[in-house]
Length: 451
Image 1 (spheres, one colour):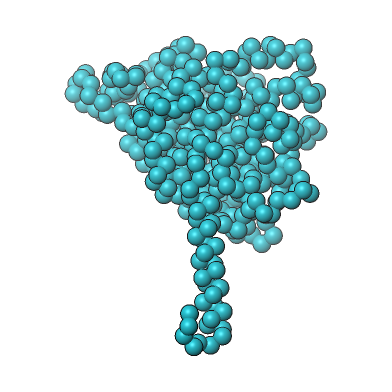
Image 2: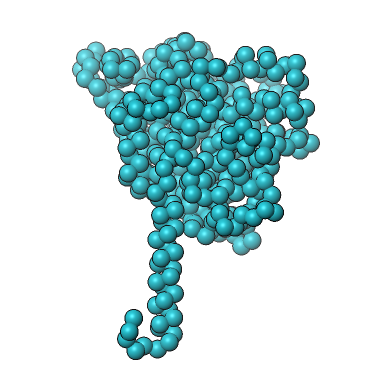
């Protein structure tokens, strides 16, 4: 620094040093936050209404949470607004304050994204017939750790135009399955386009090379199908319900789902993987986290589906599996905490509140504990595989699960456990674990797929 050099070089050198220090500080803010706590960023939020122009011009509501520099938040920054039903324009909206009162993370409406970007993108597909606000705890917490999180809600759930809107059973599920996979891919494309469009709020905020996809329940089915592909979306229903005979589907319905190669990381919350054959699951080559109910809990609520988590884990080489004991399917949503808020906004009658709570809410685990354990594992997994924060690998171990201070978690790194297979071939039967016990079962049992 004592050398005699032109002023412009000195200024450039000082500026470079300052920028270097800033980058180091930003890297520290991004990479070293405890995955079990709120991250270092403030959280912005925005709502988008996207039209899927490649498949039926369907309307797709998207709620987006994203990182914001804390110094950009002031007393006048508006709080986030969460429509109770984003597909119904006259429906009332909740605010971040409604949720902060019961312990949820704070978010603000439409502030400027952090200068630390671009950030990894996480696209999340919700459960069947749900609304985007039902997963706001995932959006806010992941955004605070430096992720742009888009939770999509397709307006086509429960709609089968070719059947006149009538519920026909599995036919409706197949149609929705096709909708979801198309919508998730289209949302990725739309957000990447906004990322390079002048005047867009998210311009420059997304790293197109770091994209994760996840989902709950049927949304998880779409995520897993997009990661590895589905050779024929109707094949499992044929075998399980109609003995291989065709159904009166439109000609364009029973087609393959092609994998979306932009997806670098996959995760599911009780993902409905019964829609995929074992060999289709085995094609998934990206790091995968399967987070769901335990074997016993799954079987007690949905007899016959006990192996859902273990089967997918056995198929996918680069996967880990975490099961939450005493968990229930609806617990992955923040619906139960939202029911009293819906009553206050007049969307749900107070006289119906008890019935809803008894149907969908389980007192065995607190909603606060659920939010904590789900987001801890999601943040750690995404940090390892999208940021390279290898120190968070400590969360992805059986030892961490054993000493986890909240709900009991059973964690599995590998399903390739020592078990006697019927014909000594891993490829005709699959091993799976129940606690410390290894068992074996045919990979594609005839009665396994959803009827």
